[in-house]
Structures are given as C-alpha cells and as structure tokens.
Length: 264
Image (cartoon, rainbow, N blue to C red):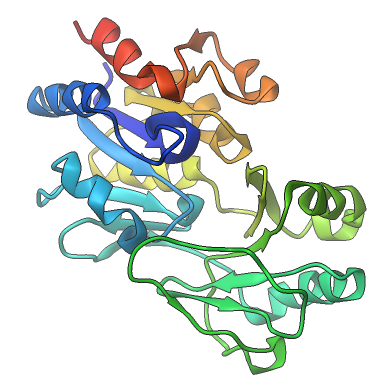
C-alpha cells in the first residue's frame, strides 16, 4: 500500500514558471487528508522552498522534506535533522583543482549557505529564499561538512564539464545533472532514495510503500527504488526508460492526473 508520495520539484511538480498549479495542490492535499504523506524531494535547502511547503500545508509535526538531493532529511517545523551526510573540504579538493585547471566555476554548499569560489570562473548559481551567499577562495573555505558542490553555467559549459571529467573524479562522487545548467557533486552515499529510505524507516515503512515522481538524473534512484516510480512526459529519455509508470508533463498537471487516478 502506498503511504508516502515523494515529489521532485523542477520540471515535475512545478510548472515552467516555478509554481505549483491549483490542480496539483488540490490533488496532493486530498491524499494528505486521507493519511498519505506528501514529501518534497529537492536539491535545494528548505528555506528556498518554504513557500511550496506552506502552499501544500506540509507544516505538521510529522512533515519532512528531503533536501540537498538526499544529504539532509529535515523536519519541516522543528528543522531538526532526521538524517544527514556530506563531504569534507578534503573530499572536494580534487574537484576544485580540476575545475580551476579547466576554467570552470564551482559553488560549495553546507546545510545553511552557499560559498561561490572566487578563485574560479564566475558561477551563475542562484537560489530562492533567504539563503546567504558568501564568496571566498577554496583556500579560505572552512573545515566543515558540505552537502554538495555545484557547477552552474550555460548548458554548453556544463556539457563540457561532463565530457572532460576524468575517470578518477567520477569514482569519487555521485554526480547528477539536475538541470541543463546545473551539475551536482554529492558524496557517493548521497541520493534521494537514501534520504527516503531513512524517512520511510522513521515511519516503520519501506520502499513498497513509496510512490515517487521525477524527470531528471537526480531522480533516478528514488524512481527505481519506489514501488511506483512515475516519470513525467517531459522526463529525460533515460528516466522514462527506468519505469513502467508515466504521466503527463509538468505543464499539464501530470502529478495530479496520476495521483487522482491511482488513489480514486
């Protein structure tokens, strides 16, 4: 029985203008009222998506969000972490060195703010919400745990980063293209599915109780793990091929169409 519905945001739940449609909102509130947990799964920090959480009414004592693509599972109201993992500065050193030599940008995120690397090419990375950006060189980066690192640049630049990444770097990170202009570097054990596993265990449930919606590389893990993994009609071809379940586009209320039919 499906007891938890996990939703990617960009190009999945959100329309192209970054909004949750009224139709999607009503469908998700309807299953919440029936006791099905609705969980947003994103690469962003919770502050950057708080308006979506409020719109869906996910502010109860047992409401959680999967943030930083699984690196942090956080309670929406108390902001207490349920599960947390990341990388050290030393882990990120080889990535920084490669990007510097090749002329590419880098932003490093802990669980509270963004550090754009000023000794590298300028980044185009942005986040909504009240998120602090503190530019600095990699040498000045504090010794702490980092949720992820991001290369944000025009699509052709991100294509070049992927093409030029040496094999040894590929083995050090879980790498996901979350958007055409964003390439994310996570610890090898970080994935949305890992965060969801921790959350399901918290509720004494497992992947047989999970439905997940997604469209991009960073959604692959949870779509494969879920009992019902749903690819959007606008999903990347490799994501579409992962699952037998498909729905309409993010512009066509694809989430609501599938949810309404499945839970009717």
